[in-house]
Length: 161
Image 1 (spheres, rainbow, N blue to C red):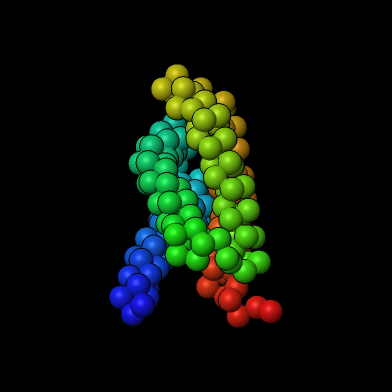
Image 2: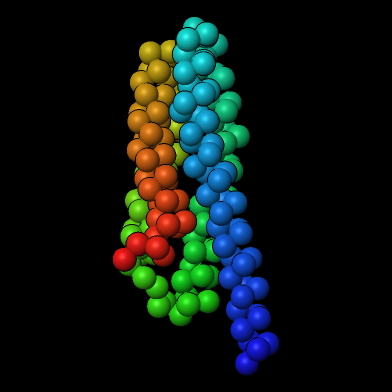
């Protein structure tokens, strides 16, 4: 019994650590992209410099977001089913619902406006590229808000009645 409890505790610790690291990568990256990079680039660079820079940043960041999404779902489901056998409190179900919305929004962002941006920048269509960056910015802002709420539930949810 003690060995089984120790194994479950170790599994939970690993799963939570992976979950938190992936959260920091995704949510922290969105915070940086929206509140630091975007605003600095917008005030300092003209579209022919700003838009290729943003595309290059997204090219690198979105690889990490896909990795984070996979790690978040794998570790979250590991915790949910593997450790707790699906017996979780309400806030975990809310977190999973928000995660589903965030994942869907990111998938849309990646496959529609980001792909369109990747076509417009090499064509030097700065107006079209700027419109897609605007769409990406709005989706990132929505996902950032959802991610912050989800992170707060993950850290404080167990203390809520």
